[in-house]
Every structure is written in structure tokens, then in C-alpha cells.
Length: 308
Image 1 (cartoon, rainbow, N blue to C red):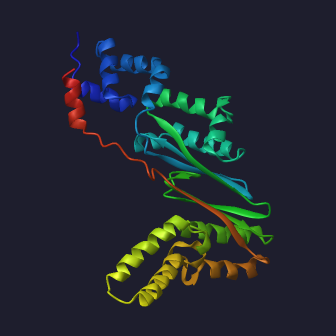
Image 2: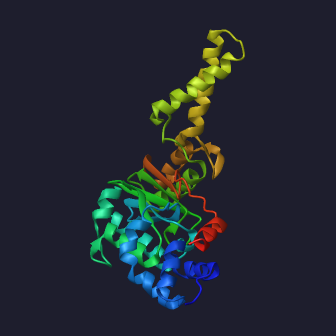
Image 3: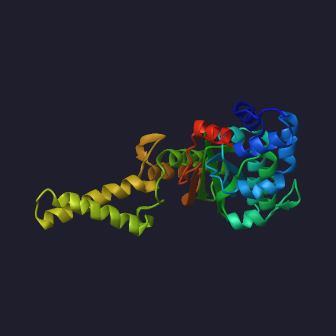
């Protein structure tokens, strides 16, 4: 009987992407034969997929698909960045984005839509990929924008390939103007959104609860100055105006040309486009945003396996 050492388990884990305990069991079942253990894990893959679904998937890719007047951005998560660099995973992310383009853009609709390469729903296709690749994967978020007249411009930051990366932005421009001009200025605005992460397009569209929370903070800070309430009210109003300027897209200083606001830059582009331009929507997905990553202690994991 071959001794199943921690080093042997680690080697299988790196080759297969499976968990430590699964690797130890596979090696035990195959008398320490790495290749046979890989086959054993693959044979058990489908039944293991559901168990893998409990593991945190905070890595992965953001993918974008566009068709001029509409575009979609999706976030497909994996457990490790290593898997995100896998060609099969990257192709899956692109494929899911393409499928999403023909849906209403909700995760539920995308999951139920047919994935052409497999002929099965996207949800089942992802589940099969979990079993094959050996890591949990999750279609976590998606957003779709569409305009009847105009373009939906796109931008991928930290691109890992065509249409995939760590941060994806969509911006919808409603206009009857020149589409090449709209696409160009739209991409610049999308880059701006990637950099500044505005809370809303216009000041009046900022979430009321967020604005109220900021106002209360400003009130408490101003009262600490000991000034009369009438003065405090003016101070707070001034700070709220500045707050809205900083978080609303159209009033932000344009990162491409800080001498202009985004709104002024759009106005300037109207002359070249030959028509008015209205930004009607935006979406920004940053990979892993809001996901609590599970910190693993590899040494402790090895020790646990060694103990059996």
C-alpha cells in the first residue's frame, strides 16, 4: 500500500483543482497513482458538483457582449484566479454573455436560456463545467442596457482577453447622431465610470437613503463647530451640493479632460455627432465586489489531511 503523503495530495490538488480531502480519498482508492486518481475524480465529478457549490467563488471574470444598440455585462465567478485564466472558463464566460444578450439581462433569465454549445440551459452548462474543472462557479450578476436610437458603449478594464476582464462598464447613449462619434465618446464615458464609480447619472437620481445618511453626518460634524443652527444649515447645504457634484456622473470632472464636467463633455460632443445626446443608463460590475472571500490556511489544511 503506497503511503498517501501530504506532498502527494498537494500534487493531485494542483493538477486537478479538487479539494484536499477529495484528493486524499482519490489517492487512497487508486493506491497513490496520480493519473488514476485524476480519472477517479473526473468520474465522480457530476456528483461532486453540488458539494462544491458551497465554496466561496470570489475570483473569475466579467464578460461583455454588445450589438450596437444593446449590450450586456455578466460576472461569472470561480474560486481561484488560476481557473479564471483557463481557456475553457474564459470561453464559457464569453458564451454566457452572448446568450445573455438575447434575454432580459436578469440572472434568472440567463440561467434558464439555452447555451448553444451544449444545447442545455446555462445553469446546467455551468454545473457541468464545475464537475469538469473542479471548482465552484457562479453566475452572480448581470446587467443589460438597450436604446432604440443610439449606442450602448462598453469598456473592459484589466482585460484578460477579448471581451473579458476584471471590471466591465456599459453606458447607454440615446441619440440620432453619428454612431461612430457616439461609440467613441461613450467609450470615454465608460472609462470615466470605471475610474470614478458614480452613484447615479444625475444628482436627483442619487438614492434618497444614501443622501440622507450623508446629510446627517454633515449635520453632526457641523454642530461640533458650535456655530448657530442657521449657519450650520447653510454649511450642510454647501457640503451636500459638493457631495452631489462628486457622486453624480454628469457633474463629475471628466477624467479625460478635468477642465470639463462629464455633462459638458457630452454637450461638446453633440456638435460632432450632429444631434443631441442623452445618457439614459449605466452599469458597472467589478469582479468579486461585495463577496466575502474565504481565507484558507494551507498549512493547517495539510495538517488536517495528515491527521486523517
